[in-house]
Length: 141
Image (cartoon, rainbow, N blue to C red; front, top):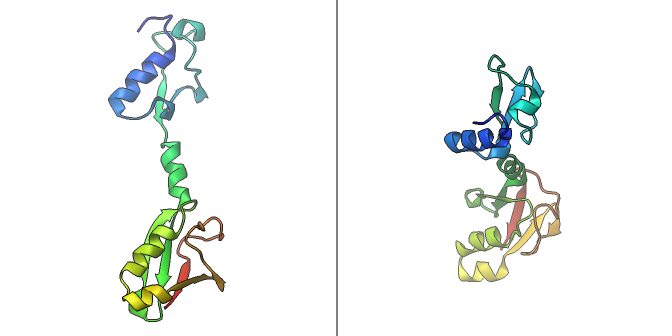
């Protein structure tokens, strides 16, 4: 690497070797973040300087983990509990449809869903209902 090349070139190479995104790589000198748009010569770095390379967690994955919740659908029978994972901003329709697909034809037509005493529609999202991980939607059929 040339002394005049930006550190971003080194970050790109490291990211490729480590199979991570360049934005996940942090270069530090004595616990100070080095700007990757600067070059080695601009930063006054020499051969004896030690640069720490830290790989951070993928922010998108971390954000997705926080946005995913587990919702339980519970019918009258204890054995009727089913758990589904979905994004907080995804419509509940997909899991409601999956649940009713296991019911008899007459029960499908009669099925109604309730969360905290209020009826749930297929286009509502967990975020709309302020749901938290592990919350239960009651199924009345």
